[in-house]
Image (cartoon, rainbow, N blue to C red; front, side):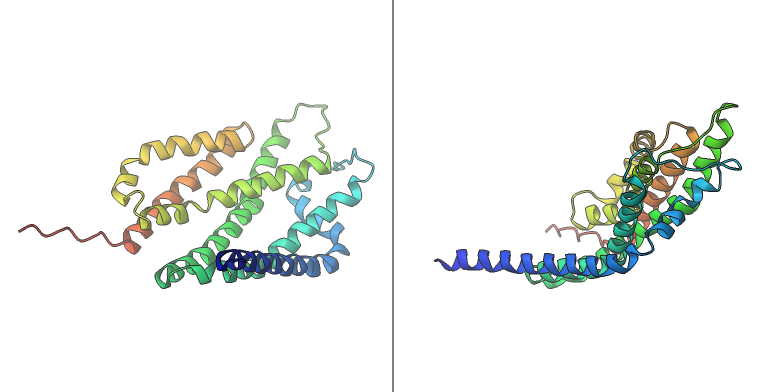
Length: 245
């Protein structure tokens, strides 16, 4: 067996071991949380339940949905709690192949990107959900019982968490593009009108079809783009111009 093959196999073995460690960590967090799955789902459903009319409730159309859906919520929470350790395992696998200057940049960016993703989820939970659910409750026709299936609610919430989490990663994307030299900060400033239009198009695709929802995703995306430009302008130093004789 050649040295290249041995190196490749050793990397695969290390990757397998680190994946197993990450999965074990998630499982260790999930097991105790499973006993509180109902309370976790109630906490997740609180923004909707708060806007339902008196006596309103959610429904379950699937026979085993009342068991599986709370377990899915517990698994999601377990993953979020174990995420720092999961990222540590991924970093430990990737870091040996990086240069020193790449490590100095990558580690802070990874840490900040995780924090921003959590901020996006928090924004969706505390700001977006109450506003959207309140709007939907207000426009519901008279005589219509506005209720939703718990599985569909979970799917909607997960989609919004992912959408807003990725939205809050915009500053990281801007910094990486500028730092890698793919696009300069000046060029991205020139693209500002297209970014604004693109933000509203993305918001129209991922949010419910109402103006409030679209604005609540598009406006933070535009503001975060501007924040990314400011940070990139500060962090990324322009390359020195070649001296002419």
